[in-house]
Amino acid sequence: MADNQIYLGNPNLKKANVMTNFTPKQVKEFVKCSNDPIYFIRKYIKIVSLDDGVIPFDMYDFQEEMVTSFHENRFNIAKLPRQSGKSTVVTSYLLWYVIFNPNVNVAILANKAPTAREMLGRLQLSYENLPKWMQQGIIGWNKGSVELENGSRLLASSTSASAVRGMSFNIIFLDEFAFVPNNIAEQFFASVYPTISSGKSTKVIVISTPHGMNLYYKIWHDAERGKNEYKHTEVHWSQVPGRDQKWKEQTIANTSPEQFQVEFECEFLGSVDTLISASKLRTLAYDDPLTSKGGLDVYQEPVQDHNYTITVDVARGIDKDYSAFAVFDTTTVPYKLVAKYKNSTIKPLLFPDIICQVASAYNQAYVLIEVNDVGAQVADILQFDLEYENLLMCAMRGRAGQVVGQGFSGGKVQLGVKMSSTVKKVGCSNLKGLIEDDKIIINDYDIISELTTFIQKGQSWQAEDGCNDDLAMCLVIFAWLSVQDYFKELHDNDVRKRMYEEQREAIDADMAPFGFISDGMEEETFVDKEGDVWSAAPKVDEYGDRTFMWEYR
Image 1: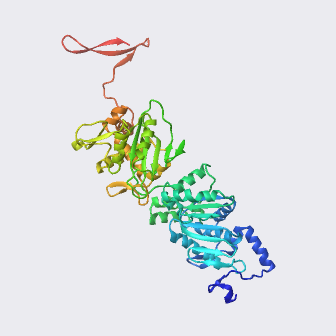
Image 2 (image 1 turned 135 degrees about the vertical axis):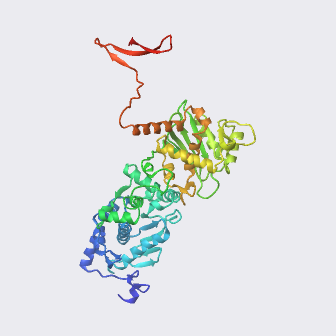
C-alpha cells in the first residue's frame, strides 16, 4: 500500500477514502464474516501471548458461547474467574460490531480509565492485524477513541455518568463492574440506562469477577430470578483449559482460600474482616420493597398494635454521605426491618419532617437519633418544632455511660445518642449476635450491601474505602438500643437473655452425649400385681425421724 494510503505513517492502518478493489473471494469472505462473528474472530482476530507473541485468537468453548449470547441478546451479564480472557472476547466482538455495522457508537467502560484505554489498545492491535481489504478507513485513532470511515466510533473511559453524557450508544460494555463504587454505578445507570433501553437493538454487556454484594450482584441475582432482561452467563474456573485440581491447590497455596473463593469460584463474598461472618453474609437475601419513593423503601405496612422503633443516622454534608433511618418491628423476636430511608440530597431542615411522617404512620414509633453532628439539629426540630412525643433521650450515668430513656432531669441529657467508641463497640458486638443468631431479619439490598463492606479498621468498625455505612450505622444504633433497660421494659423482651439461654441449652446438649445420669434423688415407685403404681411419701414422725408410707397414686 502506498504511503498516501496509510493513516499517519502507520503501515498497518488504511486511511479514509482509499479505493479498495475486492476479489470475488474477498467479497464472499467479507459477507461471511459480516454474518458470523464467531467465524470472523476465529479466522482474523490476533492477540498477544506472553510466550508466543502475536497469535490467532483460538477461542475456548465457553468464549464462543459468550459471543453467541452477545449477538442474540440485548442485555448480557457474565460472571467469570480471573484470567479467563473475558475482556479479550468482548473487545473482539465489539471490533466485529463496528466494522460490519455503519454509524454505531460503542463505549468501553471500566472501573478505571487506564483499564478502559488498555482494552481499547487490545482492540486496536487486533484491528492493525486485519487484512487491509477488511479494514474500514481510519478517521480518528488515539488512546481514548477510534473513528472509522463507515461512521462507527469507539470510546474508552471510566464508568461514570459524565463519561457518556450527551451521547447515544448502541453498545455499552461495562468491564469489572463489581469494582465500581455503588454510588457511581447507581448514578451511571440512572443517567445512561434510559437512552439504552429506548432503542430496539441497543445492547448492554456487563462482565466482572464478583466483589461483594453491590449493584453488579443485584443485577446478577435479579437475572437469575428472571426479574430483569439480562441473559446471565457463568463460567467456572475448571472450564478454562489447563486448570485442574493441582492448579487449584497451587493457586490457594500462593494466595488464600478466601481469595480463591472470590476470584476463581466467583462467590459474592464481602470484604475481608467484615463484622458479620462471610458464611452468614452469604445466606442473607433481599426482597423487593412493596413501595419505593423518594429514598423510602417500604417492605411491610404498619400493623395495628405492633411496636416499632426507628434509628437515625444524619448526613454530615460530606461527599457520598447519606441521611438514613431504619424502621424495625420490635413486637416479637426476631425483630424485622419493615422500612428504610436513604437520601444524599435531603436537607437537615427537611429531614425531621420525613422522620415524623414515617414514625407517626408506624404507630408513633420510638425514634433514636445519632446526635454527634447535625443530628442534634434534626432532633431539636423533631422535639420542639414538630412536637413528636416518642423521641428517645440519653443521659450520662457515670460508669454506666449513656442510658436511654424518654425524659430525664439534670444537665447531662441529650435528645438522642452520641456515637462514642463505647456505644459503637457495644452496638457492633450486639449487631453481630443479632444477625448471626437470626434474631433480626434484614431483607434490604442496600443494607446487605453495606454489611459486606463494613470492616474492622484498627480498633473500630467502618465502611471500606469508597463505600458507605450510613444504613449499617442505623443497625449498630438499634443493636445498642436493644440491650438498654428502657427498651427491655418497653417490650418486655430481653433478647440478650434469650440468646444466652438458647446458647447455654445448646452447650448443655453438646456436653451430655450419654443420656441422663441419676443423682439418687428420683421419686421411688413400684407397680403391684394389679398394675397400680405406688410412690413413697416422705413423713417425719413425732421424734423427727424420717419414715416412709406407701401412698396409692
